Image (cartoon, rainbow, N blue to C red; front, side, top):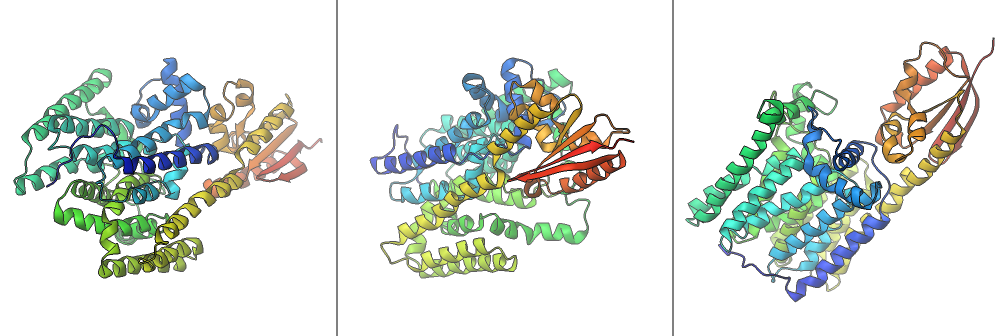
Length: 530
């Protein structure tokens, strides 16, 4: 097994790749912001604000003890101002540090441009670059685990400490890091079989693990009287819903454990990354070289975890394959793609396998009438087929970068975030004592982020649910302002919207005026006079 020697800086050949990748991520962060997602990110933004104001309390809600998800983000908001885009700098920092770590351990013989290209172009990976979600921070900690293990011969004590610290900080950020919990154990078994055990490394893992675990469990024991309170709150937070399988029939569960993961990888653009990583995985498992071996082992732990792990300990329920959660695969896959790039370029068998698997993905996309994804995968088939051409790198760059760039105007046009906020502000100002402003529930949920430091606007913004509880009319006028983005992100809200219209009719309101402007539909309902 090769061991990495610690170097203070990049080799000169890799610095330019790092600089280009960093500039691309910075530009994407700056130009690609399309607003918040009106979901969990609202909680993390507000929790971070409360933490640095000294008012945040850890409760039974499992999000509240994800300190890694909101404490660093909250610090940026505390220093630079409470602005969702500015606070998402924490995600940019996480991505840049991840890229640094990957290039730090990349062998000089591997193409740095390949790693940077594949690490910085996956659409979902980039989408959450401008958001405040634990997954984007988890990218860094997941990457740090195999990176730390790669130095177990050169710097065993520090390497073991950093590996456990990465797992610990990752768990404080989001529980998904437990998918890598088997990694040190499997690494120990495989090192033992090869008689390549580094005793200081594994002793460092054991000692650091015991200390950090004692501190963690001790906190919950002192604070809540139960050292395993965190586990209990996680179980309570993963309940039966439309995204669970334990309450569905046998075929639904079988589909989730067999075909659905592959379909999800194809639909969400992860399939190509997995396919091109296969030569690197094969190389790592067969040669046991560093960092191929550690990267391969880490990826397999994540893949099997996503495929089979349960979301709760109370009953077996395979976790929902949310594409946001899968972004932690991208950096390790990019590393494996770079490590195995020369393998498939020089092997006809590997090229046939890659083109075959990509073609299979294209067929899946065609059956789902996803023409864009089918075209993307077929374009990659074409890029592989011209392996002998000096223009092949340019072709790959064009195929991978184009969807990433096109996603920016698509998302901005879909959401029209700034226009929505401006329209809501005008509607708030137009709403008097006898006018009730009604809008999407997810906008009311996000009011403190949409209108920070503006308590009047926050108070006047009412979700659809609030009107459904009326027994009698309360105002002369109801201004119903609907943000059409709900059809894309929250389609279930259509049923609630329909119930609101029926409720207005029942309460004696009639539509006096309606207006549609871009993503905003507005209806003014007046109380009928008798």
